[in-house]
Length: 249
Image 1 (cartoon, rainbow, N blue to C red):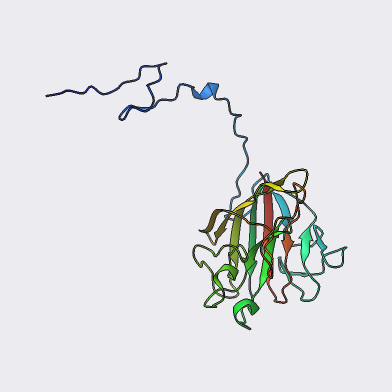
Image 2: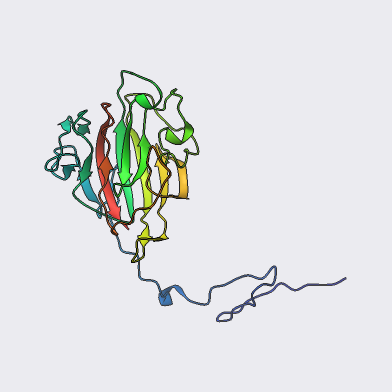
């Protein structure tokens, strides 16, 4: 009978690579790790609340951190009871704070009284860097094209699942966004990527964004700076937003 002795790596020795059954032991002890020690932040006491290193974009009190995209100056949406609400006809609003790679938390709800259907029902949008849209829509028992329903990267990726709550209920998006990069002539050298978690459920898994999320034409990258604002869309429906914060990565 052929006896095979188990491979044992002694302290300070690295086993040979590529041999099945051998235990792979890192030779660099933790105290010699070349990476910096992770900094300490304080997580929130409640789910969805901002951690200590977040920038608060909207705390429910006012729109001082937002501007009107259409008219310039102050944002013209309404603030009441801790949320902001689209004021149809006043146009999109954008954050004064700009960021690139980020973790974004945002909560939203569509009207509890259902009006319209398809894209005409509780429609809005969240645009990273004012360019790349994560769709907001009442997609609860509401048929529309798949890459235009709630949680889609508009006209590019349908969500993996439909995780929508009922109309009028508050919903959450937690987004990890990696900004694109461009060379000196405006050609993208790195495309944007995005992960979206809707109501605690993964619906976009680090997908590569193909360019601006336009409605009526193919996506195309337009060169922009390394940082940009968060834009919220006025699509004519009374969509609400609250508890918006971002962590630059």
